Image 1 (tube, rainbow, N blue to C red):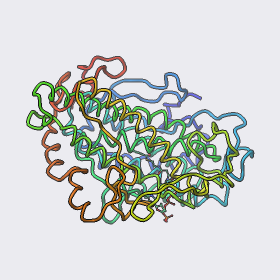
Image 2 (tube, helix red, strand yellow):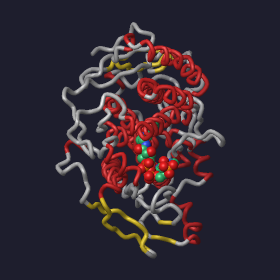
Image 3 (cartoon, rainbow, N blue to C red):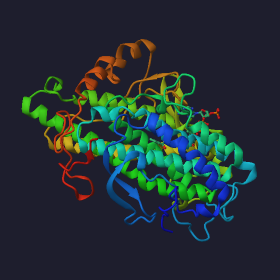
Image 4 (cartoon, helix red, strand yellow):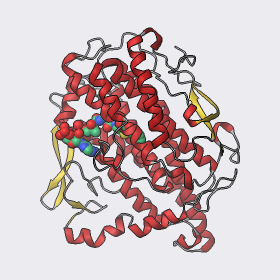
Length: 471
Ligand code: BYC
């Protein structure tokens, strides 16, 4: 179905035929707008931004590009088309028709998952609020804003779920999503990584590469849900998510490119004094963002995850394509844990290892981009390899919380950790150095000195296109 833009709230769910829901969302809309004014990108609300807006939900050509002021962005409710005859594809209800309403006994669990997902969306906008002021180019500024408005739309997607299917407590949760604040002592966001600060563009690109990719895997698991409206909304969100990870991967590639160019030009691997970011420092940022994002998958052994699966609420990555019984009652899965002074792998019931399995899929995916970055470094003739640290490094959730593990996977003492951790994670001084490189560049076609220009522009526009017209 086409998206109805005549409506105050653009949608493809026939909102005008459900007065109760329409009223609930129209009451929430001004609160969202006021949150956006307070917590959305600071200083650019009156600028014209070359944004893409969803105009239909099919995979081909859903996007229209044009200049929009962010507060006028057409946030709305877009679900992927229903699949005729869709069934619950795993767990105890496998084979039953997919649910169009929330099964009463799973209401609390489903609401909680939707709230956790929904909470990350405004959190990331809050984390990135000040970045526009130090943009390396108009191209990058536009990409930041595209990511931000789409995270705003993802919040709409989860608020629709809450308002449409969870009555009064859903409405209360929808309000609370606008009240928590990233990093706030009293009202923090729910998940750890979303309370970290994103103070510079290197962190932003690492975040969109590693943390948005958690989003991809979580959304893909929820897209398998037997609760059909959740599945359909996540399927459409995934099409938007792809661009966010593109921004991360190409952002890091461009920084690496610039660093390699400076290294060759000045015949040194310390490019800081030439306004670049050393490869070793890039590796430290990678270590930080990868480890913090690994925590977002929850514990290796989780009865929560087992329950979501058995209930048919949250599946595995590409569940429907897997060739097994989709019940996992007798299967086992290998997980890592601390055994004495090293890390060992043990087999546990697959059902309890659902989080770890998703983390494995995620790690494999992360490694692909790292391999592409290494090709680029290699092509520049430089002998350096970026590496994903061991999954047990710098963890705060699960089997490796509370122990110290080096990036190479050695379990180490507190004393060694204290001695070495500045070699593995960015220090305050290094963060301050990266922050010092962040000066705003807003002339069309100009790029900051620490990052190479992109190979091509957005939507076939040239790289010197005025992607943002500053007010
Ligand atoms: N921080 O059984 P366990 C995105 C809690 S990103 C704090 O292992 P479970 C995006 C847990 O809640 C994707 N607490 O956990 C990206 C539980 O609490 P209770 C967001 C944590 O439930 C970029 C306890 O520890 N979507 O979209 O299996 C920009 C035991 O844990 C954390 C989702 O996350 C943590 N990291 O799994 C914008 C999907 N980890 O029950 C957007 C929805 C665990 O003891 N969420 N805990 O009170 C979920 O599926 C699950 O909540 C989790 C946790 C996978 C996150």
